[in-house]
Length: 455
Image 1 (cartoon, rainbow, N blue to C red):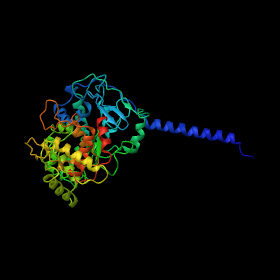
Image 2 (cartoon, rainbow, N blue to C red):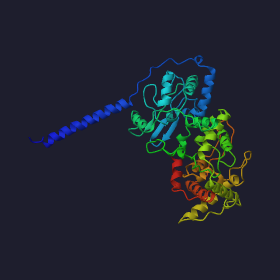
Image 3 (cartoon, helix red, strand yellow):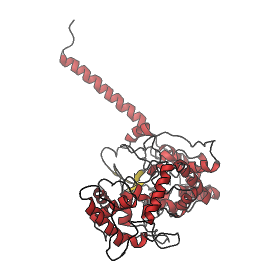
Image 4 (tube, rainbow, N blue to C red):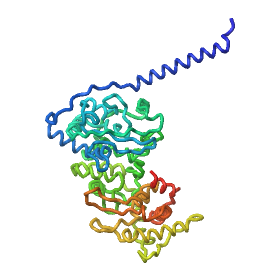
C-alpha cells in the first residue's frame, strides 16, 4: 500500500499544526483568565478602627503611595501620573474610594488580590509598574491596614488617561505569561540569624518600600535581574545607585548617615536627594524614626563592610577634594581650573571646556566645602553621581537642579538648563568624571544629554 500523496500529507500536517495552535490558545486563555470579583457598596469610615487607619497611613508613607498615585498639583491618590517605561507610558490609577473612577466598589478580597497577585477587581492583570511583586510579601494585618486607610480617603472623581504602550503590550492577558516567568507569590520570612531591627528593615525595604524596583537592573522584559538584587538600576531618567557591595559612593555609608539621608534627604559628605528620591524622603519623614533606622540598618548590611578597595577610593576622593583641580582661583572671572590629562584626540579641548564651566558655574558653591548648616555645596569628588556607571543622574541634576517641594523648606541647587549649552553640560560631566572622580571617561555623554533634554 502506497503512502498518502504529498498534498494529503501537507493537509494532515496543517490540521495537526492548527489543532496545536488552538490548544495553545485555549491553554493560554485558561492560564490568563481571572474572574471578576463582585462590587460592593463603599464601606463607611466607621466600619474601620481608628488605630487601623492610622497604621495604614504609616504603611502608605513607607510605600510612598502618593509618589505614584498623585500628579503634581493634583488631589492625593487620584492617579493620572505618567510613568515612562521602555515599553511606553503607563498612567497610575485612581485609588481613592470613588465609586466610578476609583476603588470605592472594591471589597477587601479584591484589594488583597491586587496587592498580592497583581489582578484588579474586574479580573485584569496589572502591569508590574505597580509593585505587587514586592507587596505580595506583606503580612495579612498590613494589607488590612492599607485597605482601611485608602478606603477612608476623600473620594475623587478622576479617570486616568489610557496607557500608551507599544503593540501588543496593551493586551493585558500577556501579563499572565510574564508572571509565569518572573513573579512568585510569597510572604516575607524573617531571618532568625538577624536582629529584630534588621528584620524590620528587610521587611519594609523588600515589601512596601520596594527599594529594588528602582535600585536593581532589569532584563529586556522589564523584570528585575536575578542575582543582581540592589545592584543599581534606572528610574524616570535617573540612575539609581547600587545599594549592595557595589555601591558607588566614594565615602562608605554608615547606618547613621543612611538614616539621616532617608529622613532628611541630605547627609554629611553625601549628596542631596534628587529626582524620584525626593518623594521617597518626603514620605519617609512621615513614618516612625525607628522604622527609617531599621531600613538604614538593612541597607547598610547589604552594602557589606568597607573593604580595602572602598577605603582606598574614599581616601583618594577626600584627597582630590582637598587639592586641584577643585582648588580653583579666579572664581567668577572666567579663569579655569587645571584639567586632567587627556587620553585621546579631542579630549584636551573637551576637558578644558569642562574645567572652565566648572570654574564659572560650579566652584563658587562646590569648592567651599559644606556643613549641614552652611549654604555651600558638596565638594564634588565626594558626589556619588560622579562614580556611577552612567552620567544620567549628574546630567539631570545639572539641567534640572534640585529644589524642595512647593511650600517646603530644604536645600536646593539651581537649574542650569537655560544657562549652559548641551556641549557645555557634556564637557562639564566628562571633566567631573575624569578630574573629580579620577575615573575613566563615560561613553556617549552627548547622547545622554540629548536624552535628558528629550526624555
